[in-house]
Image 1 (cartoon, helix red, strand yellow):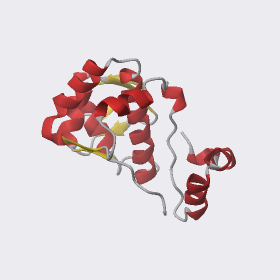
Image 2 (cartoon, helix red, strand yellow):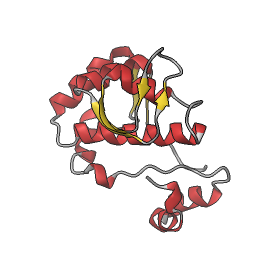
Image 3 (cartoon, helix red, strand yellow):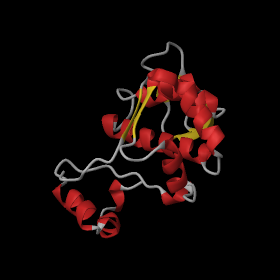
Image 4 (tube, helix red, strand yellow):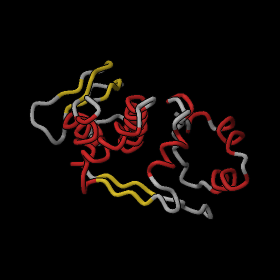
Length: 164
């Protein structure tokens, strides 16, 4: 992509469950009825609902039963990240730290030159509406060029179907 990576966050399944439970669950809207591939007898009916950590992780893993398969799972992942961000928007540093600690070794942060306190301060004023998800196309050279050239808003405006 030619885009330098300043840091990364990696969370395994157990970490997702622990972090969701630490924030008291998340609210997401299920777009199509989904029968779980991983938990016998579990069905996620269409409509908005509250998810526990185990439910959220299971729902995020679904792919086979979705009408759009992998693309649907990616869309659900973006919805999930927005739901978590919504829960943490306006939280104080102690709460954010407690959520990170709940994940324990299931959460790995590489913040480069940043520390957690600096990252917290940098995103403190953002609302969930300020954060967007982008589904990169298979051939994404124009997206990567827009990111590096500082013209991402133009790319987003020209590709609304790839933005959530």
